[in-house]
Structures are given as structure tokens and as C-alpha cells.
Length: 348
Image (tube, rainbow, N blue to C red; front, side, top):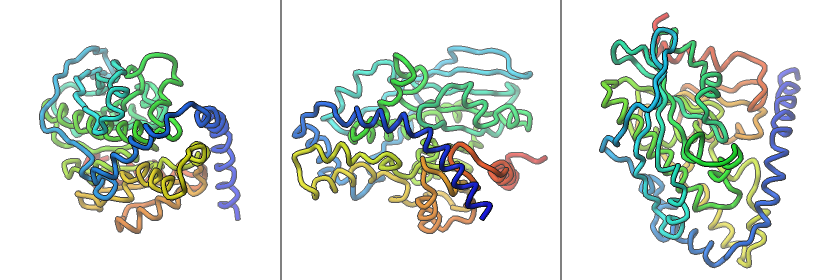
């Protein structure tokens, strides 16, 4: 009873956070749309077979991108570096490509490092959540100072349309997940995976071979995808992972305004979630995958995590008490640091 009550409280806090999103979604749903053009964007993913074979949608380059250290400051006896690189991502969908590429700031990727600077060290590469992305936010979210004090180097991959990758106010980041803009979001996801791989290549070029990845929320979604596309990471940790972008705010309020029938709306939903980790299988051993979800989570529903646990046959899958933001136990930290020890990343 006590745990159920705490889950309800956690869910209530999530609902409060969702109120502004629902208001924004209402106005986004009212936007003017050329529905035939929109339908053409959606049809592309079915015609190309991506909806049936999601792994073919992603492109992982093996070429190290041009990169340079654009900022460097001291950090607790080591260095905090900002590395910028040329992200040569090209959207698959030709019907959305010009619009996507019109955001010039997004063509520059960023890898932030907190490094001891003495030798190549085992590195935890972090993937932030939606609307996050500031290195300062990441320092708090991933407890980077603690990881650093344990002898690890830490890095942060900035998703497309976050932090310096988009002009304007913080709210501009919402373009990544504009309600019902399926094609644009699909290309954002592909771009996130592409740049995550770019960050791994840059770290490899710096002599770092032992890389583990941790992602939270949207970052968990991208981390899960990368586990299905590459066996290079030493581990993948998915914290309160998103596993579908059809929740928690349904795009049905937008789709119902279309002149098309229910079958078409179903095809749109399929195009919106074909790339979910739920539709792929890991290339790496599932013993090297950690998942932590929250039972009262309203942003990233835990029942989808249960499906992932069963489909992937996960041995490291845990459920916290509370919601996405408010939790009532220390399970996440306990299993996370235990996992790092098990994988030989920390010894203390």
C-alpha cells in the first residue's frame, strides 16, 4: 500500500510537469498543414521499407568527423573540454530534408569532456533528456563530479536541436518533438544516433577504447537504439527510458484533423514508432545492458519497459518507487554503481 501511494505521488508530480506540454500540444495541433504533403512525408518511411526493417533507417559512419577543442577550462585537477565537430548528417527523407537542413546551428555537433588529462581512461558517455542538454544540467543529472572522483573520465553528447545547436529561447528545443511532426522527429532520432556514433569515433581517435554509455529519458531511447546498431560500447545503461514518442501526449488530437481515414492514421502511428528499441534486438550481450524505470512514471511509462525486459530477456532491469522526477528510494544509484563495478569501470 505504501509503495502504491508513493507511486501515485510521483505520478502526480509528473502530471504537473505535463500541463505546459499539453497546452503547447493543443496549439501545435491547430497549426495549418498541407495534408497531402504531410502524407507524402509519412509514406516515404513505408515505401523505403524502414517501417518493416528499422535497422536499415540508421547510418553509422566509420569516418572520424573533423573536430577541434573550442573551449577548455580547469576541472578538479583535470580539464573540462568542449569539442565541436562537423555533423554531416543527411536526412533520409527528401520531403523534409530542406526544412531540416535550414537550421544551420544544428550542423555543428558537440562533445563535452570532463577528463583527468593524463592518459586515456575508461569513459562514461552521457546522453541527456529532451529539453535538457546544458553541460551544467548534465553535471547534476549524471553526478559527473562523483564519477570523475572515482577515476573515470566522463563525456556528454549533445542531441540535435539542444543547447548551442539551435538559436532562440530554450523552448526552441521543442522542434525535436513537435506534436505530430513525425518525419522531422524521425530524422532527429536518426541524427542523434549518428552523432552519438560520431562522439564514440572522436573518443576512439583520442585513444579511448573503453566507453560505456548512459542515457536518461530521451537519452535512454537513443542509448537503446545504439545497443541494437553497434556492439562497440562496453555497456549501455538506460535510465527511465522513453520507448515510444506516442506517449504521454498523444498526437491523435492532431491526426483527427486530417481528411484521411483510420487506416491512414494507423500508418502514421506506425511511421512514428518503427524505430523504437522495442522493434529491434541488441547487437551486444544483454548482460551488458542496464535498465532502470519508475513504476509511477507518466512521461516514460514503465509498462513499456516491462515489454522491453521480456523481449530482450534482460537480467539487469529494475523498477523504482515514484515517478519520472520524484522518486522515493536510492535504487538507481545503488544498481548503477554496482553495474560499473561489475563491468570493471570502477574498483572501489
